[in-house]
Image 1 (cartoon, rainbow, N blue to C red):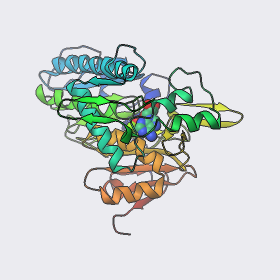
Image 2 (cartoon, rainbow, N blue to C red; image 1 turned 90 degrees about the vertical axis):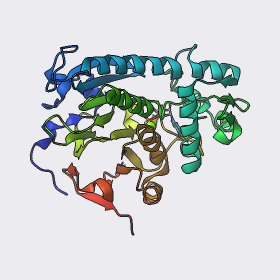
Image 3 (cartoon, rainbow, N blue to C red; image 1 turned 135 degrees about the vertical axis):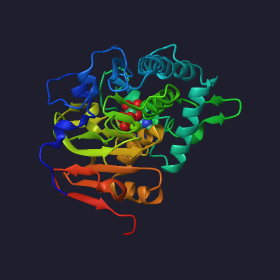
Length: 358
Ligand code: AMP
Ligand code: MG
């Protein structure tokens, strides 16, 4: 597949750094660029608001008669979910659970636990919500980064495994195993973006977008009826984009080692941990982008497929091709796209298409 001219400048750039305004090329079609925050809504003009939550810059944009109400409600919802799920806030529902070991959870958190446990089963433990003790051991929770000793890593590994917790879905009661703590950071943003799509629908938004760091979720097509163009970040050169995906009505969620990492003795250690080894996953993947109409699934799978590596991830896709598509980049620079989206993904490099029937 070949790069088609300078179409990238028309992309809605799914890049957290660009949203933070680091001076890189910005989308000419990004509605957030065109309309000042909080302006009156018309069917043609978007309403857009930016907030910082869940450790990232977010932009919520909507078109429609009730776009202002939709965007304001969406921002309140982001703040509510952030307060509920944050592991950085001692009084969040998750922190209270982690401190006490048992709790009766709210409906939202209950849904997330259900989904996270489903992902744990489906991905053979590559996605594991009990990852927090390892995140702490590597210093990702307090930014006091360090490489834990072999002994410490082995001790902490004993606490990892969602099969050690008990969950009663009916009463929404959870009890963690000894030494266990949970972290929904691998799916929280995707769940949040899905909730925003529900809010958009409640307010009859005709066309809308939420951008949460490196992730976007889209409602409908663009107001002119054409597809959205989402830029996928280049993991090797994070101020640039790898390619452009033409799409709509779906979440496009990327996990990459470049998002959070530290260096020690010439080695790089990133924030996506392989629950089998207790170390930053070393599967040969640089980034995974998942495209799905289910934001929670897309977020969970971006993390899980990153851990799996290209080969396992391709097999996983073959078994679940009706629920998502993926773009993956390996450390040697090879770009892969699953059959379902290969035609809508433009990339300046050759793309290896992952086919359903091998
Ligand atoms: P993402 O950027 O969506 O890939 O999520 C990365 C975040 O998910 C990390 O910052 C951790 O909070 C959490 N995480 C890391 N490794 C895993 C894992 N193997 N399974 C589930 N969550 C993880
Ligand atoms: Mg994720």
